[in-house]
Image (cartoon, rainbow, N blue to C red; front, top):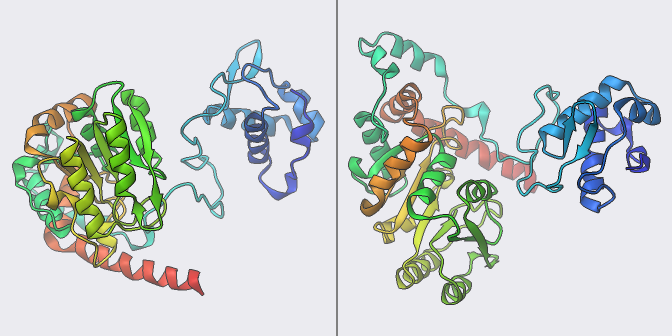
Length: 372
């Protein structure tokens, strides 16, 4: 590696160590740095750039965290063999990022509108059965938490019995257990052509193949879905039909019905990730209402209520519920009951609904500002 590409960075325009990381990434993506190539020593690069050695040390540490490079004691720092990670590694801010650092790689919830946690914790502290929340529970979740999930699903327009609802550790976990329940390594999973990047991580974890289905300005094209299904045997379709991630399109009811018809014809499972549905007032009927026996419906609470509690409710087809519970057991054993209890209380006392309305209002205000 030569240090010339790094010297082209305008170090005054960014935090120094982050500017170096960006330059390393750029050189890897452009091919100027090849897999296995040794980087300059920290002192060599510091002298070349006119920065402190500590700055380069932080840069190399961050680059290794982002899977760009690997360090070998006594030998140096090398470009990783997998030079371009398939999952963008900047999905979290550096631990010491400045408050003004704006990360646009994640769709963050509206933290300013989230509920006050203190009253919920104070109420829990007075409960005589509080210690029950520290005990192992059934992998599908406590009965009262699943009933709260039934109530939450009703807000999405989805009707399900408690026996078909499983408590998951967020929508990402619900997506993982859904695909693990119906797919085997090597199976083909279809997604929208532009899709939520988290599904790529799940596919890699489960050794599944992903193929994107063509979209237009109205979302996933049913004709393109049908064409792929005629050519290849797919196991499941994953999609975000309401406020699609990342295009923000919402599938019309007619397209949803076409997709269901194609899924039935080709025996295709559907994983419907509807985490944004509660942020709009007039979304078309959920696909799960049109094909409940082949649709896994993910009703998250992270975007609409609070992200840090990591609670989502998964309504699974009756034929797959046993495998879903097994997948929860295999991944987390049981979702922390304390977190589920907080969300359950908020659903029951109206806090969750009030939070949704505040977030809708704030979203509208921000969109108005953006348009202006």
